[in-house]
Image 1 (tube, rainbow, N blue to C red):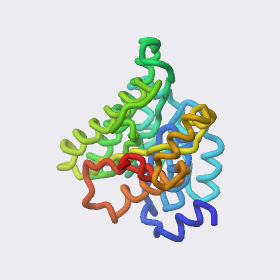
Image 2: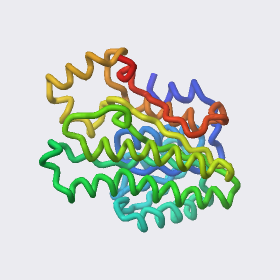
Image 3: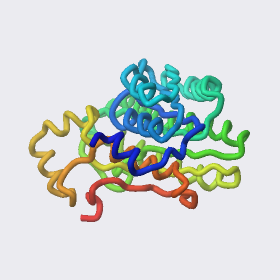
Image 4: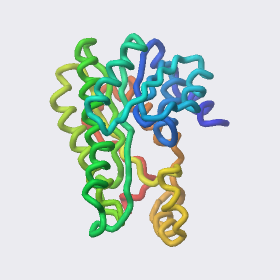
Length: 259
């Protein structure tokens, strides 16, 4: 059974007639999220620098509209404008998933300030600018749902990932403050904190046999996650089943943090 088949057998299409936006949707977690939301009935706007051709084709194969909005998400003004264009193209906006991220690996003593700044701009500032723009649209419609993709790094330190860990910790705190401010507007804001996921983003780390073994040995379920398993958590947070969930960080790490 494919991930999409499994999703369709588990959830009814509760997003039928709605529209969702996903940043960084060309591959990995973002791609899995976009396709999952389409399988659940939503038209989907794909916001990133590239054309996301593969993701677009997968969404359209499910019979949903896919609007590709190209934008440099490190540019806050461009990111906000991209949300407005997405809502205009799809005719509405009900869900926003802020997934775009950048990692520059290296020892903290050697990280260039420009690299640190770029990670913050792509990962944190884009999360703020896109979610704020989405909240503006939601406020006009009487509500909506926002999911930030944080990271298990929001809870522990890492090796050679200081900019990324700092930005993801900030994303988790950003979500909490937004949840407080926007609840009266009918906007639910939550986050998913993935642990170790098998994507191109983590390829270099998985190629380090010692680090891969150390990490996998601590995961209670004994394996790294697949992108679809993170997408399933996002699906829950935007579903009616999570109607009373606000300001939560849902950790999806196979039990890594509890050991």
